[in-house]
Image (cartoon, rainbow, N blue to C red):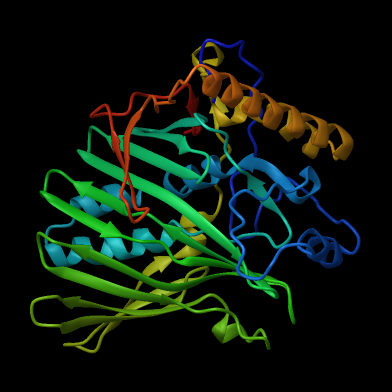
Length: 383
């Protein structure tokens, strides 16, 4: 657990993930696939990998908490404001579908972000959108996100619980937890889930977002079903990062629109009444020219901030000093174990600072923010 009263470390921020991956790191380790497979030689098929620790040479300089947050605050245009301005429920819903697609980022094969430590936070502002994340559980790993825009009267509530499992030739990660986008001016709540992340080693190495996503708005009765398709072994361009789906009225199951395209390029919407097709999402427009966050007020940065917790590891990886990166990462993990041991010795139960957390008997997690509005952050996206 991170304590905010601790001495602050320096803050090392890195480029956001883009359509081309993280260009801030030129990683070219020899025999990469063999080295990755060697990590799993003693891991059984079907094993839960949530406690699996990667060596630093397999990390890129960013916490998973930051990757999670970037999908909300690192965008080329303000899609959420556009949603809020739409006049009809159907128009808003189609824009929500496009926004949901925009939260995906390409993942680099062979590299992964750090597993956040308990109590780690990430707090960033992009104009009027203030985003706060907290790692509310370490085993199992659970991340909570709360984002608000008071001017637009918009709120996002996400709870993410990834469950990676080793399947022999691939690792499959189910991302449990619901995501909500609330448009308070329209009294509408949109609920959705996340696709799975598939890391394939053989026969062709690659990473895909796959599986089904359902988006629904209880107030309007509108629903959408999206299917993210895995790449074929032949790597045909038309199948690469493909997405298909539909938007329909839940009460009648009447299909209003068909969705087709590629989530890293363009996605189109076909009106089933008129037969007309239009583009609802252009990844190049949304995910190009993304700006790296900067520190506006260093003194206000919490010691629990991701970019502070992992600053030494970040700097070592950026310098390609793998020995130092390993030492720095080991130091972070060692301190976490020491804090846990000390807490257990006095029977202390850790409580998140920014969320109320509950877990059902079935293992379903729910995270509710303590405060109504997220305050402006000392780390900002440059205008």
